[in-house]
Length: 446
Ligand SMILES: [Zn+2]
Image (cartoon, rainbow, N blue to C red; front, side, top):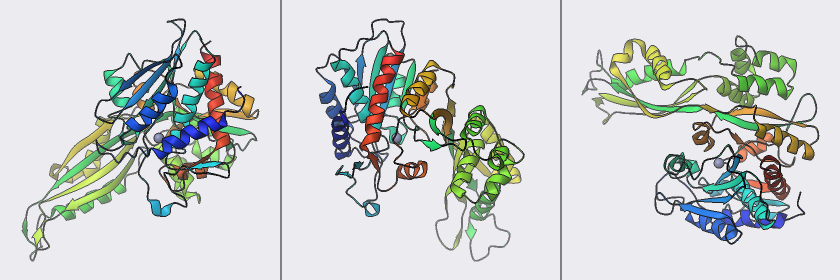
């Protein structure tokens, strides 16, 4: 692997953070064109093919390709997003957009989600281009806008409107890779191979208006809605111990008193209810169940008017194979006798996606990681959130979430920094990921 250009990836990350491409979900936010310009300047003049896409003004994505010699050889796409989520500055010990380098760590919004990887991928690509690397396969790099608001102006748009340009055989993007100690000794490096789906919906509850001074025997939509929330919150979905879960538990080396119930559909629910570590319990439960969380309720117009309508919003997350039709059937059953007064309106029906674990990419990644951490093994993991990987998985392209990190951060610290306060990354982790992408291209594409 190359000698230390840590300064280069650190500096590029700092510039990406300082551009502050904050995506608050509105079409005009993000303005990723600033990071797109930065990356274009960084990559141009190196013999790479560069292409830019701007579906709406300012929401720019950049594609760079290091063309292979053989059209039939595989294409590896390294994809990073260039936007970040907003901050609550009060919770930060340092300026979230100053990108200060303190004690070997770069601080700032996007330091782990995921400007770190976006920077390391660009540095690896430029390094290979400068070395006149000319493999059989093609190495592509895609810096996308709008990941943090579901990718409508980024990866979602590109896979719909520029499918040939972004076509690939393998995709790597966030997140994963943070070293986790195994109960059997050694390290486990989680690879995100799948993610849950979302079925966000509104329940419109009907009632009959009337004077609130005489509530007896009225048809109050708010009272009905409260009962709907009670029924939904009481739902206990059956456990689904899918392959990714089974493999993750089998390979993590948890103590027997954990792994046995976590692999038993009849015992996992009780285990999650009673485990004192509530963070782990929630995660284990979410990875193995359809979840329904009521999050918003609105009703009423005036204190003395019986409300004739109420609206409930539900955040529903599905597992591989679970469809919107099945979700609606669950909701209808929960509503029971109330269903004729409640209309279900789906706002997003985005199915779960998963990639196979048995791929040449997996094998090469594992081999390369072992050259850094000799006692490590990859483990497949499913995230309960959403990433741009899903657009490619839906096209049948294996897409993994991965990056290589030092052991400076724990899994809990890493998780807490996603969309949280005091986000930062150590320069050793930046170097490890940069070296990994370079080695991966050399191994997989030659
Ligand atoms: Zn991200």
